[in-house]
Amino acid sequence: MGDIARQLPGEFGGSRIQPEGERLHVMLGARVSYGPTDIPVRLREVSHDSALVESPVMPPLGSIVRLSRGKIDVAARVIWTGSNSFELELHETIDQRALLIVIGGVSKISGIVGNNLPISKH
Image (cartoon, rainbow, N blue to C red; front, side):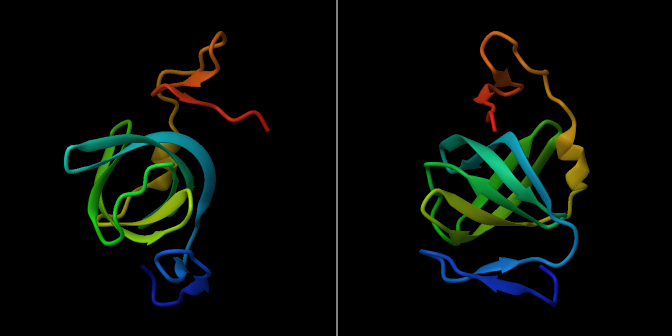
């Protein structure tokens, strides 16, 4: 993460670090894998070197995981956990805008996006 960071309060992992640079606020389906566990998650914020992920399932703090969405598949470390979200430090930088590419489109009947995660209706 960048040299300049803003500390944000966390629950279990201490303070969440706000990275320097552009951070996109999104609501995109993705997958996080660690060991034999593979869970659907929702990306909430993404920068070139980190991601805030929403999920009812929490990987252990400090664990190494894989974050996948479309053609992006990157190793990451869990650096913060909250009650229903966790922060990943990506081991490689990514073009966060590449995550915005539509995968599969929206089902008009079921309200499901690309990888079968429900979309939010705000």
